[in-house]
Length: 322
Length: 133
Image (cartoon, rainbow over all chains, first blue to last red; front, side, top):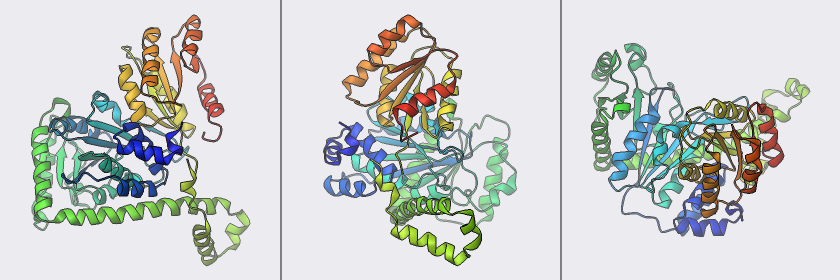
């Protein structure tokens, strides 16, 4: 029997703590069945003794995000916490396929009962994660995971969705990644809660720290001054301090009530993501359906009306999948 | 929108050669499939747990060490024990012709031997999942 097509059984098994049911619920939600999250949340007594904590790990391709997460799972999971990792990699614009390879670095946890790792493809989203990620995070929390770690795609300057999703976001950098002016630009550096200079045994690490310090000293003082940490993930160097700083940031969020702001952002982002997924699917369908003659003859306004009308009339394409 | 096909490409056992696995992963990605790669030297339990967490439709096992008659049955047994009904399993690598019927018998649907063009793997999956690839 395919659990994905028998939602009642799926929910029962989810409530019983069956991980296969969790995995299959994730698939449904990833394909747009957001209402499943609402149903599960209303039927399952949410474990509420511990506030959930969502940690985002972002940074350019190759800076060592996956390896850093591999090292972070240890101290958290031995803390008697259950850890869920979402590892996001890009979907091919050419084929729609993807190679999801982040978990290669974390496979030693494949047999650890307190750790669950799920690879996620971006599927059309350009924000560095995927449109339905927050629904998937909600499922992980409803299942009973205490800490959710999200690894974004190899991110550049404007793949900023992770900052609306996480409570705490770590920007991972490495030595020789551009000169000082890069740190002044709008985008990620102005938003990171914690900076990690990974591969800090490479030449240029201290210079990078200095550049970030100078940048921090020239910007308006904030209540939370993002720490700058040198880490060598592969050698487990600096991980203990990173964990301490992560926990300090968490305490700051809780004590300053900022945690409520983050929750609000996340809720807004969830609606936005769900809507964008539906709209983009409908938009692509309408555009593909336009003949060359229509493309030349319709004026902008007519085109917009056609697109919006199809969107409103259309079945919400994504929910059809089983 | 059709549900995307998800395939786990896994490397059981101790051989350290994954060129073949990567070539297949690449071809499947180019066919519009979401491919999850385990990396080298995986135990049967790691592979089966990963398949469950990732909710894959297919597992592709790549092996060059010669230990397939030992490792594959263990993987198939674990899949059965954990009741992962409906996951299709295929294999590829250096596997003698004589072993293939025995592997088919334990539930491995197809074995691709060295030199198989990647198109063949793609069309094998297309046949099995006609409306999803």
